[in-house]
Length: 273
Length: 290
Image (tube, rainbow over all chains, first blue to last red; front, side, top):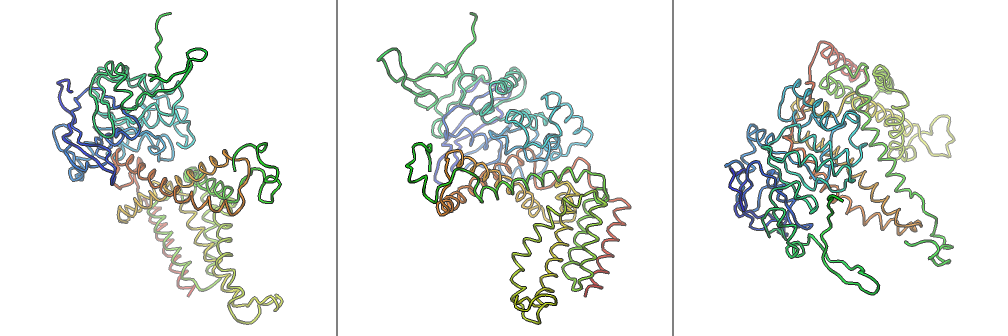
């Protein structure tokens, strides 16, 4: 499915294998500029691999990926200017913030990306200060990154990508492992981008938030695209969710002596009481 | 061994292999290594103290370091070696490093390492018995001299290395290597090795902590060794995968192999003086220590 906007990413028959394991199997899709796309699927369905391919961190085993009309290949990114341009335009927030925080302090971490892209020192200092305030990191800015809580690490990881002001943000399970307050902060940020020019691709398991954070859902099953529909339709399609492992059956009691198994979509809503 | 002590057969609890949970030597070693790793991160703090070495350009420090290490490696005169050692300590004090920091991070580990490697030479090198020691000990004067040289050489080189690392932020050390035309691949490997060691230690610590949280009793030594061997392989693979992810995260933010700095490297007059002085002193030490 495509909403008819300008294509930013285009995948044509893309496959990716980790030795014998097929992670992405003949995937063709288009991501339009300015859309918010959720990638759904059980563990091992290929969501994270797809994000690595979109960020050109892995080349596909076969098939073609186009970014803004140009083919993304390792050779194309060997050119420093082309590489800088792509890295400035596309940011990736990894699932595990530990892998993304490798500098001694939070301030160094925020400055890392702009330094690599060759921004002038004065601009970097100003942007770091602005990002520290925006992401409420003032209290931890001089702290070593390994001394932060998981929620703080996630915020720093997101800030370290946002500082480049990318037009595309790829996020891998942005709310995984966070307490409810930190989760809410991340979701607020994703909601903020609704209607902006920014393109967002989020891999998630969290069916409870996809209607808030995405305009379009791609459901993956064993590396293949199983569905491509609006989030509202996806969360109501219990057969699809059960088949793709996004909801599960479990046994529970409906009164004395009445036990049975049926699928559950775990979500809750805060309506008017 | 899992389960609560109440469920264990009394015989098992009474057996010689069973002790209440505590830290094994392996866990204690890992925790100590992790503490050392954490302390090395704190080197960023010592690198920001306003001392002599901290005020110099990282390239000047690399050049001076290379000169002194070559001099210490070639010296065959004990007095020259001792003079280099004293010079290194003086540089440390002028760089606001504490003697305790040097002792804990350089002298003590170097002493233990040398004792382990060179200790047997005391007995194995033939010659007249060492003066002041009973001949029955079998320690020769040549053995004492040889081990003394090794010890002094290792202590001196370790001290110079520690001065370099403690007085310079890691990113500047790597950037200086690139500026000195060391290939980007070597610098990336060095940088990734540093990060790999941190990840390895942290993963090992978590793994042993997780294992301890699932058991109340200590495994008998043979079982503990088996567990250690089994988990080492898993740990290495896991750390390799994580390191790869770290590298991808760096590439994703534009990293291409060059360490870039907010405050660029800049050679000033005093750096030139420092390079000339260190190379001059090294040349004198090499000549005098022949």
